[in-house]
Image 1: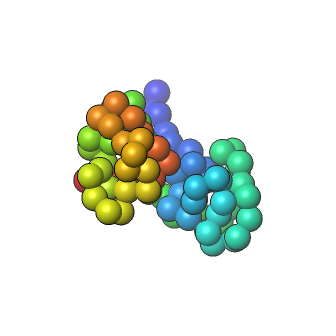
Image 2 (image 1 turned 90 degrees about the vertical axis):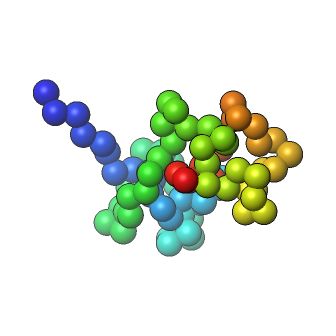
Length: 78
């Protein structure tokens, strides 16, 4: 059996905080997708602030909340 990933807004680089699509300038749901989908590395079971590109940098949008056991939608692979 081959396991595949789905292209949805949750793994699109256009998804912003509060589930807003920056390309279409509208609110989206986790199950939405469109022809403009651009895949990005997504949060997985090993994701945390400690392995996020933004951790302890000025680009971190939640520096007061960030810790090695937390993760947010801004998570980006190092």
